[in-house]
Length: 113
View 1 (cartoon, rainbow, N blue to C red):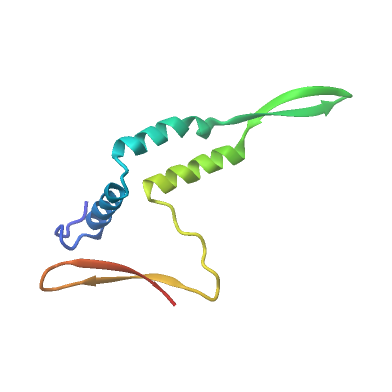
View 2 (cartoon, helix red, strand yellow):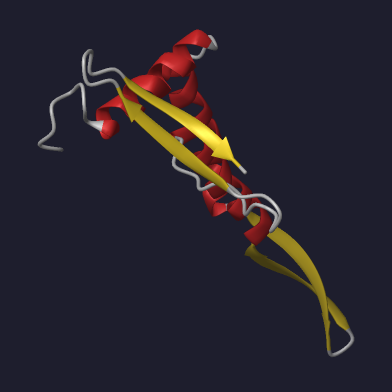
């Protein structure tokens, strides 16, 4: 936990902002928990491949790496910890943080150039 006061602690602000965005969009924490529980099995997804060995067709069960990767990607999205995809070289993005010294209000804005 940060030693900064709650008004100036960006970690607490980000958590509170995320919770507020989810609440405003109609999601409840139980919805997110249900989505995670329902899709957790995808982390261990398997698929059946058919291979020919010495003229015989054999069924081979392997990890379904694509499904597992999509599941991990989805969980990162739900958790809000996924890094944004790379920007094109003609565009750069950043974040501007403004703290009003009088009120302590923190304003975070996305900035693209």
